[in-house]
Image 1 (cartoon, helix red, strand yellow):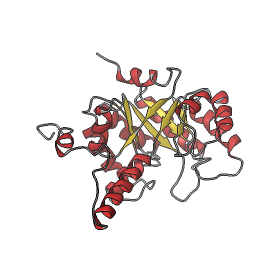
Image 2 (cartoon, one colour):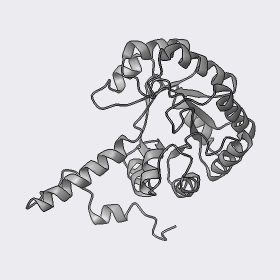
Image 3 (cartoon, helix red, strand yellow):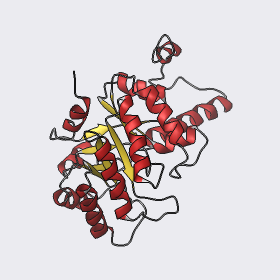
Image 4 (cartoon, helix red, strand yellow):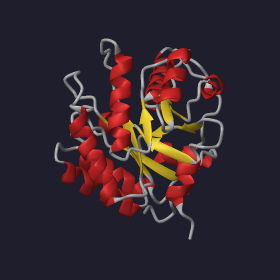
Length: 265
């Protein structure tokens, strides 16, 4: 039997960054899998916005679990963004993650940023990580710290201190979104003893440059979801303005229908 968790872990140690595109529904995930991506993640913003709920507030535990149940049937390694765990209780977070793991999910993102723009105490986040690893030891826990994302003063020492605490608790990777400066990323990858995940940002460094700075994993975050919204708006505006040529690469009805299992399950 294939050890999918070990396979996912190995993708962080190939000598080049793992590009982890983030899906928000079955169609986006199935299309990414069909395009050849070995692993995908989910985007909490996309999942929340599609459900009509705010992101980052712990409001989408049910929607995230339901989506994972559908996506786990795809031929792709799946990592799920669970915001801050949908609870402040480490045991509840661990129980939720164990349910995800039972579906076949191989990794999670767990963040320390809060909806009010502050950071959670590192001890509380570390306790959640430790509880998850005790419940599902082989699951890849990507601990996200929002020191840069939330614009904290003097973020480097805070980031390194949190990374040490999360690693000591059992985190397998450290995600520091919001950095595009390659020199800063190089410092982080040199001083954090785990695969470092960066967030791709349009106009920022590409995969090769990020890899050169030691980054092991690159996520697209909400980019694909927002790009899809932009494309939908552009198409609607084009029709309203008098006409629209078929966008390049536009999937046909049959191609989209083909992404769905014949039995609809």
